[in-house]
Image 1 (cartoon, rainbow, N blue to C red):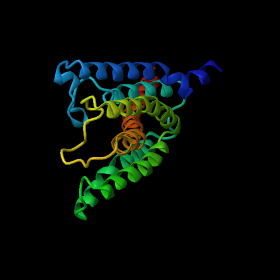
Image 2: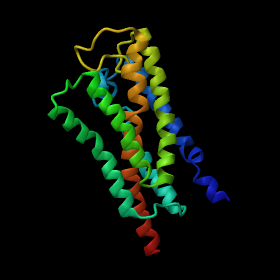
Image 3: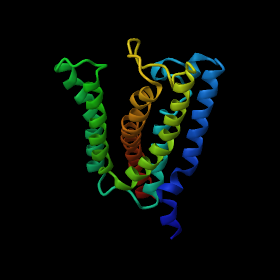
Image 4: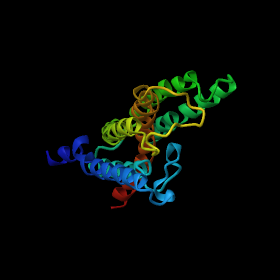
Length: 219
């Protein structure tokens, strides 16, 4: 009974979600205070700043995969899980190449819609790789990304000049704050970033499960 409770998504993600929220708030404070750009960049997309939550996907993907595997809730087959995960990872890059081949405007609504829909399809594929890990990462993804979307809403209305409200490219069209948030905040955070969290996290979780399985076999 205790083992089942320990592998429930809500139980597994509680501490990681709190850590991720703390990093999000730290990042916001760092940008508002003008701290080191290498750590708290205000550039569009975050500028590869070291303080950010995207890096945590790898850490917690490994953690979730390890915990589930050690609790006996590993994937039915590592090969199948890895294959589906790689497929889910490849879908968006392939769609990007297709959009380029069709000479679609990389900043246009058509290309954006392709990425949004593609991320949902890829997410569904990724969730089938290792359902227990997929459910855990999906819960973590929403716990991580909903606060970011809300921070972006306030930042856009306040015009704070952080990476949470800066336009994604220089010629981004002028639009009402709520529409801007929907376009650069809500949709990407709840589709593309959910895909990224689940699928990238699954990849590293599967690697962790393979290592955990070898450890148990050796023992």
